[in-house]
Length: 254
Image 1 (tube, rainbow, N blue to C red):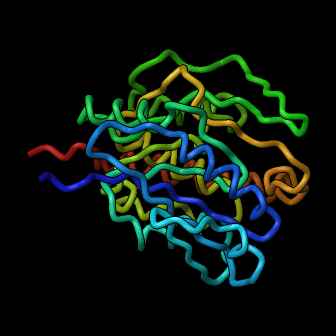
Image 2 (cartoon, one colour):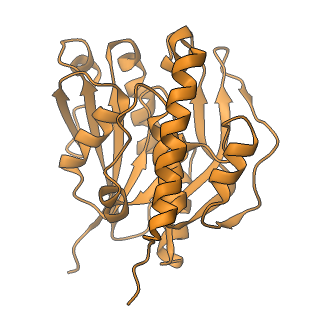
């Protein structure tokens, strides 16, 4: 009998968002994967407290870990210590996966071995339970190396694909060092680094319900501080351009 292959779901969580974990778990349980595949959910608390653990599901497919507080990028990168699968999927604690999302991401990379990562369409999940979408998605299919960086630079640091939908080859994620050590935009930094080194994929089907709520970190005033934001964007862009300049690319040839 062949070994079971795994997709690792990585979730960073802190106290204020912990109560959303059961809904994220429900969305995971509703995913259907091809025969021979399973998911393993790694929940990494950003810090050490007593609140988060009360909301972690009691399930053999779930691993819960804690560590020093350092922000969501640090928590996600620390979660990779438990990443025992070929692929890694991001799922923030307050978000949900629509039915079929995991299977579509998996198919994109399994059927296209030259593709390093996949993203998908996002709908905002509003407090009243309704959803809202936005125009401007790229065409379905492959995303060329460098395309996300140039769009992001030309559109006020807004990428045409959402980093919260990322599905990526574990080997490539580790080679790039995981998420950037930034107070925010760490997921955008990873997305642009991936785009500098490998082709991606975009699915026009909804792959994430992105919750909007008053406590989310991206809604805080500190996230939009102009001076810090410019500094974050400068580091993110410099990393991506240096990777492109070095011409290290996936898949490795020769």
